[in-house]
Image 1 (tube, rainbow, N blue to C red):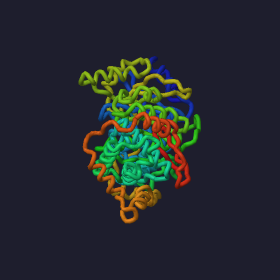
Image 2 (cartoon, rainbow, N blue to C red; image 1 turned 90 degrees about the vertical axis):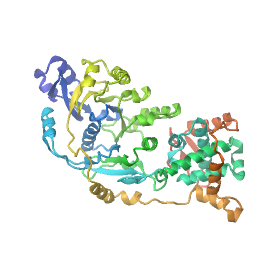
Image 3 (tube, rainbow, N blue to C red; image 1 turned 135 degrees about the vertical axis):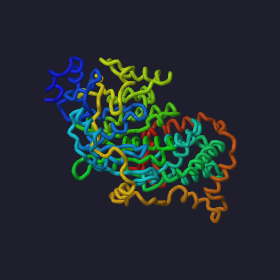
Amino acid sequence: MPEARAASAALPQPALEIASGYAFGGPALDLGALLWDGVCLPDAQVRIPLPMLNRHGLVAGATGTGKTKTLQLVAEQLSAQGVPVFLADIKGDVSGISAPGVRNEKVQARAAEVHQEWVATGFPAEFYALGGIGHGIPVRATVTSFGPVLLAKVLQLNQTQEQSLGLIFHYADQKGLELVDLKDLRAVVAFLTSDEGKAELKNIGGLSTATAGVILRSLTAFEAQGMADFFGEPEFDTAELLRTASDGRGMVSVLELAAVQDRPQLFSTFLMWLLADLFHDLPEVGDADKPKLVFFFDEAHLLFHGASKAFLDSITQTVRLIRSKGVGVFFVTQTPKDVPADVLAQLGNRVQHALRAFTPDDQKALKATVKTFPDSAYDLEELLTGLGTGEAVVTVLSEKGAPTPVAATRLRAPESLMGPVEAGTLDAAVKASPLYGRYAQAVDRESAYEKLSSLSSPSSRGAKGPDEMADEMADEVKAPARKPKDDPSVVEQVVGSGVFKSLARSLGTQIGREITRSLFGTARRRR
């Protein structure tokens, strides 16, 4: 019998009604104990049904209210029940999930308040770093698989430039010119604007010199910031995120982003690539007993900031459809208004930490947040500004898929280390991983750059090589991008039908293998 029902006689009637909404019979994650009228009621436990974790969620709250510890608490319990977890570690303090926690007065007091049997426990973890920058196994993507839509966002291209970039990818896909790293893309752009290359695109709209120059300058600036390492091979296989440890617990994949936290456009878009790649590869599973993976998307507002309508539509569609593939996505941000309404509507599980109301904008955000919750027995405006650290307002989906009553909750304490592990320990864990040898060393095999170099090398053809053409093009075009001379309707028609809507590409004429593209234009060759 669930604890809330066993102690029903001791609960005030309003609290009893709330607690009864969390008295699930099947496997569930324990979040904490109900708060009512300022008192913690440990006999009324607030929980999330395990099968509902693929219905997505939101963890929100002001800085310093305990969002990271909530992620750690949920990740621990998912791992314990055999569910793999992905965590983006923005501040560099999530690595402690791999080590047992430290019992102290605060932990003991919190455990006693919520009737938690606290046992110091470490969980199986793998540590990754984008491009190997930071402590972790390098995570790279090829330019081909990253696709034109995500790359355009990273490069901060406008709509016309994004469409032209899609045309470049379309050509490379057709001709079997694999875009492994950024120099491959530079080479293809330079070739297509050369006298020889212009004829290649004559029948599908062409590529203006001005737009090509903007793309090349953006690539040059991108590389100058040290970001070229994120693209290349060996490309990370997102199936690694779905593994379990030898003892059956789910593997916690921690992507360290502290070393690149000053490049938010890059890491937020890379997180979306990971999610889109999973969507592209995973089969449909319908409603499963537990998720295949729960993916925590930290600093989610960075993903949506400045995004085009087409980009937001793709996010919405991915979130809507990936649930049936067994993946749950939790967006982590400060307020629900950071997430577009169409995405927010799909987030059935909510953990809202405290909000501040110091300014008129804060007060507006507070009122907007309250409106996103179901009707409640609480005064949510007052409650949300008065919550302490490690307390939150919770509503989740019941085992039947219906929203549970809004519950103010004092959260449990994580059982793993609430802080980073030492750098030496972390490095040793990374190098001991069986994945380290697979991804640590970058490989530069023959791809578009080498193929085009052999076609246009000065010695064999009397022409300039791709690097020289790219550098000249980037230097030549100094003015801001103008409307391409080519009829834009032709380019839009080709890109719209061939890149962004068909979700599939032509057969590579030189490699004979199909490249299919998902909602974001991401691609992975058939394995």
